[in-house]
Length: 113
Length: 115
Image (tube, rainbow over all chains, first blue to last red):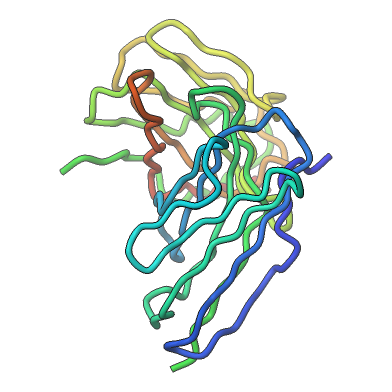
């Protein structure tokens, strides 16, 4: 039972345009959400997070939106750059700590120069 | 440099031959965890540890053992590896508690092939 779903395995976006990566979850107990970015032959690196008390969090070119009623979050990257080409994982956790992370299956983002 | 170090990075071995994947972090993190990444399944947690001598099962613990005798090290042990444990493994660590959630830091992965 996949509690965190990323339904798009891949996404291609023109350089300079907006990239939107989506994530859905089923467990209503999740209250903290994170996005990780992964390059080949490297481990995932933390990108941005959001608590369930917020509906938006912004960090430079990256913004995460949370829609609790729809159990949906999205990551917006504006403008997209070639270095953003990577696999993006969303993850969720229950309660305050993020120790027990449940990951989605990942979306491979390719930025076309 | 703050990092999580896994060894080996690559290993090909045979069914039933015990192996250990080491994980070490230099950030004085209380929390450490092991994940496996498989195509179409994302990262799934195997075991985690909240501190020295405190370990617990994740979502897919069968066939694995761990120990946490020192704060910096969290080895993953496959006592009798089988082909279905062929996967990409990641170790992660983080601080616990505090006012804000602390993101987990990941190692660069260990690719295991069990023949």
